[in-house]
Length: 330
Image (cartoon, rainbow, N blue to C red; front, side, top):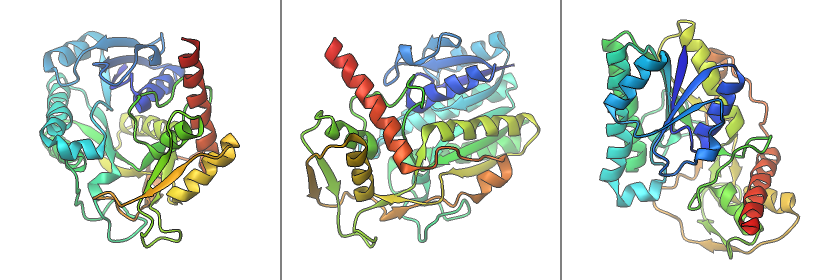
């Protein structure tokens, strides 16, 4: 049995590939390298440079490599970009996912794990938000992911095919062993951007909105370490292979940190100050977004090991220092 990982040269996907290889899995990565990196894929995994939406390519790989499971990370993830380029997001996320699901069904792949998002909830009416909350995405990014969830649900009803869709909250941090991390130059993740500001790579950090109905006026998010996240995927794979049914699960810790708390954690980790500017709210930012995280623990037996903001920040900062050293050396 082999596992196909789409987007396996990217941030989360590369962490997943390392986790699978260490578990003894035979891994095939499909990535077009638009935002991923060849060096991020461990040598024990096969890298095929191509599009996850290429049905012929994917179907041939499934047959040739005996693939029994697909873990689908490939896609576009920047919410503001999705607002200015909605059709691009529906093409790269929804249309690609439809083709990938079709390849899985046509070739008899029975297990599918999908990288979804808490953005499917939009502006939740209460926090923590649980899986049975109303889906009301407010960006094309969130809608593109919701549409893929619906396609998976319908495909599972019609075919011998089960899936787990994992709804990520705010993924952050880097591999504790320093092998991979968030490496795209235009990343918008708060913790990465704050670390870059701390290292002098950005002149300042902007805080978007200080008048939210939260204790310090800034947005609250549920930050989950990328290593805990990929281990949730590994648990989902075991669950499906053992005959588990289709489900959609939140991936978070069940508690949040504010923007200002994250900034303080980064300043503490780097033992330095950096410029912070207050700016207006961005359209579509919920005041708080925290996972109702009981179901994933109960169903998959997933137990987070890195549930600590200081640990997440320390690993993210170490990775940024590593990248900074590489840039200076070159």
